[in-house]
Length: 142
Image 1 (cartoon, rainbow, N blue to C red):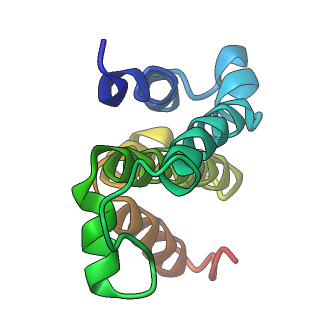
Image 2 (cartoon, one colour):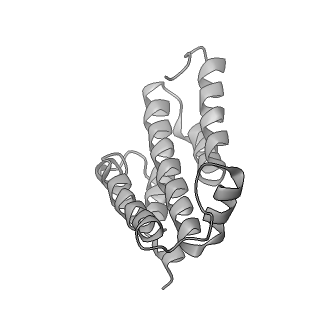
């Protein structure tokens, strides 16, 4: 199995749990505990180390310019590092949205589209949830 598919293994089941069994004990223990973000942080650190310490990065790669970012993402290890970053942060935000929606009294059926938007387009899902809070008179979530 290639690394790209492998790094999805802890994340995709967690999303499925958020979507179809939000109240389950397993969802609380796995998705809301921080365990998966910690695991994914270790994966991220391994990719980051491979690129920064062991030279598995494209020439000119870095975060100081657009050209550096483009070079960073042009190497497989750089792309995997970035993708692991997206996976863990989108899941973290999705789990927060699920908890906050429940706390604010939003029904799960209305939260599912927001979670799907977060899964596919991260920041747009977060924006949708915050706008939903504002439109319901719940204020900003932060």
